[in-house]
Length: 252
Image 1 (cartoon, rainbow, N blue to C red):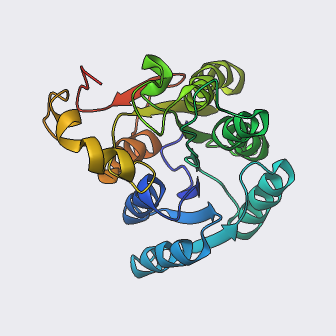
Image 2: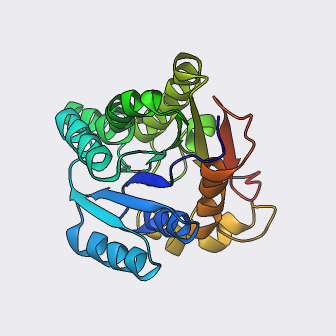
């Protein structure tokens, strides 16, 4: 693919935490950013920070589980900016309930927010990227718990772990289906200090750090650096892969 790929990106779950950090890092590297989230005040703040970096920004209030809305957003971004160079599927939601406590609708919602949302947005942007001479790139946020199983924290019980594991299968399959024009990879963060994980990091932070080789918890900026690499690296011979970013969490 050409090195003159379009510097436009869609970031879901972009209002705060990892999504916000990734959106800002991409903007700092010259990307115009389309933000997708349900948290309007926080998304407005992120949009202002991107504009302060001199980049264009669009903000869409949307539930990422809505298939039609994903297509509307992708079409609007492509219509306004002409291209979509990068998609970051970052939106996610936890569910702390075990198998004996969870309700069917709660399980379904966890799968929809974490996994179906990735399908929705890839389905929406893939036709656009495939028509572009430069193709496109996609990254989806999985989790360390997709590999280890979610058994020790409130954010990563079985429904969350199952959804994040599904992202890995989706990524590998779509890398074959969409290549060579679209490269798609997954990211598996360990314990990252975000709003989603605040209960865990506040109550068990020192305990968790004892099992991390780098002796600290991750920051959203750590993940943003990896996302930026996957979006911008030239040349790039990486697709269908998952990247663990956990400071080597050997005990959890």
